[in-house]
Image 1 (cartoon, rainbow, N blue to C red):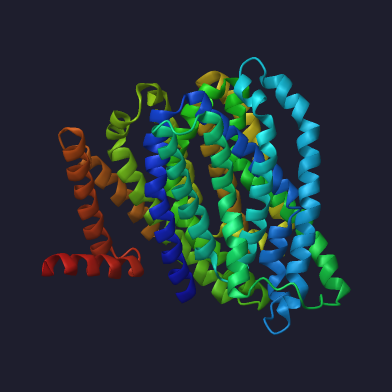
Image 2 (cartoon, one colour):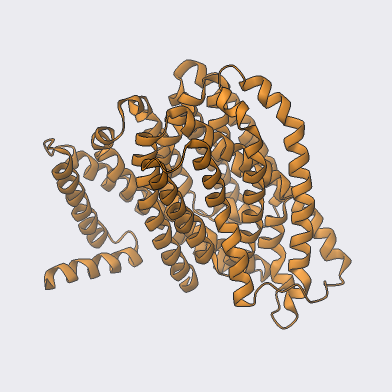
Length: 491
């Protein structure tokens, strides 16, 4: 677990530094500077691009994470693995562009009246798709070589720095919205570009080496890629299809409000992303070595750690919800319950630990793909039913219900097939302790914005430090809490 903790901490640091900048960008500057329709445009374009590019990746991310250990050899230049990756990328790019042109006229026709801004800028999908596709493939390779924190730095930190600079130019009227959109595309492409040059400079971009001759391995690659394509597309669609459907049933203005509100709930998922990125490679190696003890250890550890982090962040979010709406423009008030339900959805996601990865990288990866197809069908049906009834809150509720049902299925399946059942009293203690801290924080009288944020958040931080120290729900977090408390005593 040492490499998991180190990489997770580094990844989390980059992610949270990026999250702070992201909050300034998305939570403050974008609502202040851009129209809700312009925010909706950017988010719909990105949502469609990541779904199309995930399909265009042809499942090779899954091949990298699952089968790279069979190619891995620095002396043999990884047996020509990067040649295969770039060939796959070229084919995938052609597939993505074909998908775009097949969908273009339909997208324009469906948005020309209610979302003319999207119809006008539809060709921006192509560079977004290109950037997203190469990021997906390079990121998979970084995770496979245990450099997940590096790709996290480029995606979660560097990208947001570029967006912040772009917003500054727009704020000072040095560029108009079209120029802003062009620079946003460049910023979105920056992680893939930086990752490519980093691979070159570190000597990891190795195009030599002869591919391994085993026909059985390549047959397995095709199978893994096919089911990985289904799983990967479904995972990405789960995070993005709601934005497209909000635009479809409502308009870009509603999508802009939903996207900003979604961001606040999404921040809860950040630490889980960092831990999963590196844990995935370890799970893959463990299955290759038939090391069930390692799978058990990582699975048990991640469920309690990620649930604890998720509950801490949820308490900070919901205790300060009124302060958030003091900062956001009044139009965003309708996103209050979007924040709540998206936050709950991602707490459920975090509490599941690595259940998704265990199914995906075990011999049951075919069933995982079927499960993901069911998830997409379910979330689409729930959005179709709930958005007309509840508006943007309905989209968030659809996401929550989908995560709940699929999470319960994976938990039961892993319990029955692997005998792994990580949940116990400690998880219940985490939830109950967090709810109690939230209730206590709500007893603090409302103050003006800055004092209220400082006092309320400081109270929550102190409560969680004491809770983690004395409840001993997670030994690693207990040690961290004790260090923080001892440092404060010395000052």
